[in-house]
Image 1 (cartoon, helix red, strand yellow):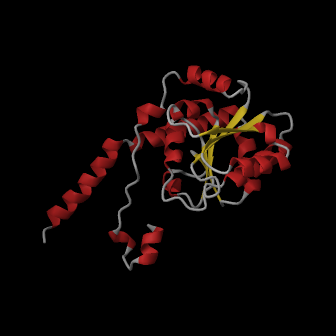
Image 2 (cartoon, helix red, strand yellow):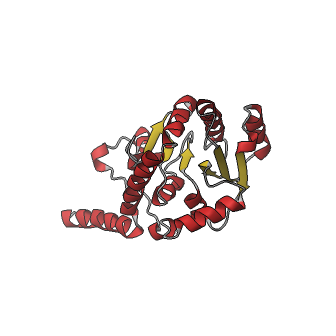
Image 3 (cartoon, one colour):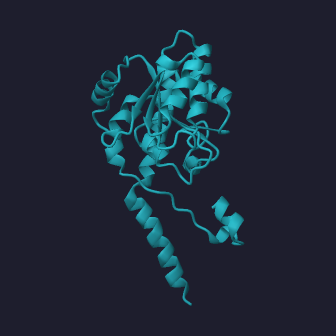
Amino acid sequence: MEKFRQEFAVASTRVKVIHPGIEFARFNLPNRAEKRAQIRKKFGLCAADFLVLFVGMNFELKGLDTVIFALAKAKEKLPGKAMKLLVVGKGDQGKYRKIADDLGVGEDVIFAGVQAEGIEEIYAASDVCALLSGFDTFGMTVLEAMAASLPVIISTQVGAKDIVTDGEQGFIVAKDDAETVSAYLVSLCDEPRRERMGRAAMQQAAQYSWDAVAGKVVTIYEKILSAGP
């Protein structure tokens, strides 16, 4: 809506934003613990590893470099904590492997490539999802992660910030602020806090079923039609 209002002289009161929906049951797995163990074994991760998940088909646009910088800073703050980053998607792996190596976290960043199937199981294996895009009209990754009971760390440029209350279901930060992101990662290593925010994220995501989205669209049409010519 912000971009729309910049281009067209339309009062915000005349614009209604309806966010995308989600197949909630697909990501809210009843056998989460089982899938978590399987996926972690697949990628060589330990049960105790604190796992940050990044999902994106454009590493540069989605802010992977900031996530890697934040991971390195977080590990400095908690040297005794095993922290890993699982990168799912497509991009210049060589470039970002070098960034990780130069920061001393090359062994802690795992590139999984594009995962055509089973992404819901990868969410189940993770502890937090980060998306620090320079621009994203919405960012379905955020809603999927929330449905999987993950707290999210997203940039102010991600449209899905509309459905996240800062400090409740996750955190909203400037896209290049690796220092603040690292502090949030450290805070989410506290399991009770992480689980509390994850539950809040799941409860929020449950309100965005496709049936709920369709109902909102119907309501707008009914309002317009009832107004007459």
